[in-house]
Image 1 (tube, rainbow, N blue to C red):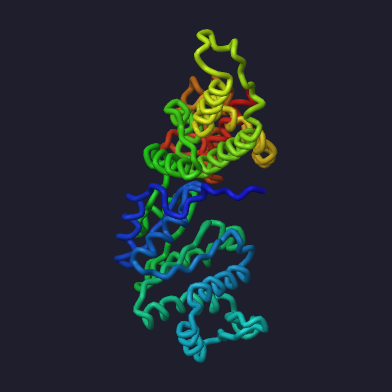
Image 2 (image 1 turned 90 degrees about the horizontal axis):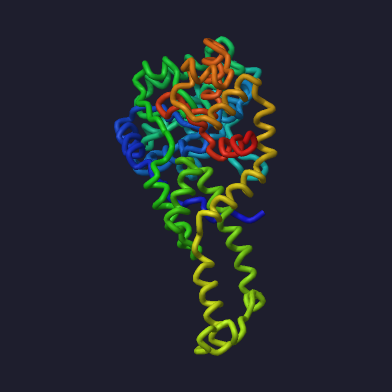
Length: 397
């Protein structure tokens, strides 16, 4: 598989959101970053944390299948953050008065261990969450604990005991900032003291600046109509933009291979020149230069052709995704792909696409938003994956 040279090394767009997060972290505040997968939520937090000199502890709650696994992920995240000899020495000092021990594995990797028989998980959670606060005070630094897919905790925390305790810690700890990453917000999140940052689609001007620069690195540029078509197809989705840019680049690479066979495209004959003023060699050189001048120029038809090829490659993935969804949600996705609207609840739209009325439609939309497949009303109920919408429309028509 060819590596993707279009994955950026720097943050693209999101400068306003970056500044917003910097302000929160600089004041030791807590925040919620809501957006669909692939919108750059973690990357944005990392950049902002770096700007304020904060250390970051990351825990992906999706990987926590139970409370025991959650504790191990938390311990791993802490040691990944504090890994220098001086920091490990401080943790060792802290552990002398705790039921948790810092030890070195046979491979030389430091790890936090405990004896499950002598301490319950609830006490372990409290102890582990206290450690970042202690380290922040000893190091006189800022710490950011990032919980990605935070609400997934409920898959095993049925009584919400752990979630409620974490929410309490978010409010109480002073030297540690918490950043929750979710797809959508919930009432308690909006009613808390956390700053809420929403990540919608990227602005076209931000995407365009990155795209032109990235393509120029590979000797490519867009005709105006081609650039407009590209931006229309990806609709602010950076993930889809990266995928399509890579596909265009690969198609260009394939075309470049034909440059070595350029003489086979037709050399021209003297009678091709109606005025008899150019020699056969001059005609050949003229045709070669004309062809070369077009090699690095991306035209609209090339964007369309590459998009069709890309969704064909992704068709199996998209088909598998639809199989995981209830028929009512698939129907809503198909309707939004064929006929985008900011009013899917309207009587006319429901009748036109034979959608379920009332709670059925609302439930389908809410579930699709929770899964990160459809934006909410703030972005007009658009499908969050433009290439998926393109594939659905192409398949249905």
